[in-house]
Amino acid sequence: MPDNTSLKSSAIHQVEDAPTNNTMTLRVPKPNMQVAVLGLVAFITLFQTVQLVRIGAKAGSAPVKAAPAAATTNTGGSGSNADVPQSMVGGC
Image 1 (cartoon, rainbow, N blue to C red):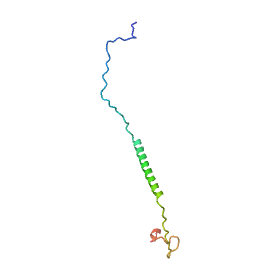
Image 2 (image 1 turned 45 degrees about the vertical axis):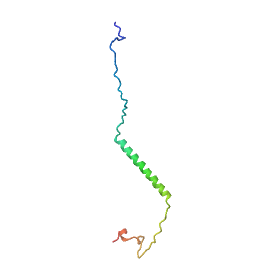
Image 3 (image 1 turned 135 degrees about the vertical axis):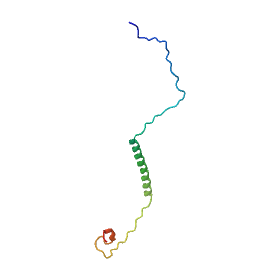
Image 4 (image 1 turned 120 degrees about the vertical axis):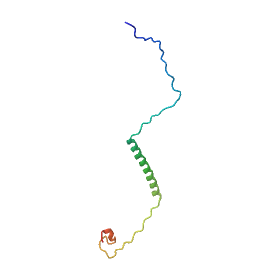
């Protein structure tokens, strides 16, 4: 039986030289529609939160003024809607 445990070859394996440029390629996965919509919702939420904080800061620092009470006059009518114009009560 022949000895096949060691292969004898006179061929020399040569490796090609590596490229000389040292560039690195980064592969960024393409975002799908769900990720884009989620990012948009997150951006809108953040924007509205900033607006709400600014409005709250303005409201907290501004003095509150009470409006004067309107004088109610009941002229010639009866019922609870006597001081309301007829256009608002459905009259002619």
